[in-house]
Image (cartoon, rainbow, N blue to C red; front, side, top):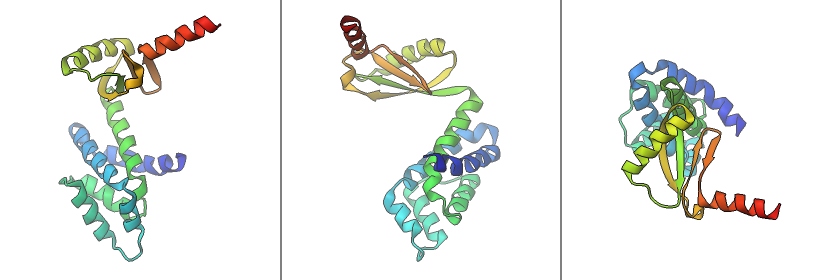
Length: 177
């Protein structure tokens, strides 16, 4: 939703400017945990109730997140609750994560595979993908059995599909053309 992205951008940028250089990744983890909590519809309904004080919402979110927060992240959470922007917190977390990655020259990569990938094989694959995409990658693996075999890698808006399913689709197109 464009509106949430627009609302979230100033919060994410302000938090990024406030985060000390070496600690931004740790802050990103805390904001991601808060974003996951804020994504819960029941919590948002509770937070939107006029009978609930901002401090109660803050205490609940921090309690559910089960993390000790650095003062900068606490200030972000307080500001978002007081301004009625708790629903934008998951988007703030995503944008803050993107800013941290951009500053460190790392891109997120999702590797879709039909089967689980061993850590050593994933490390080898990441090295190959970093050469292919020309940048450092932070890879996560997602299982997608319909690929049959091979992998499909998504880095930002770039896709590298070497799956059996893709090859069969190419063959189907070639044979019916």
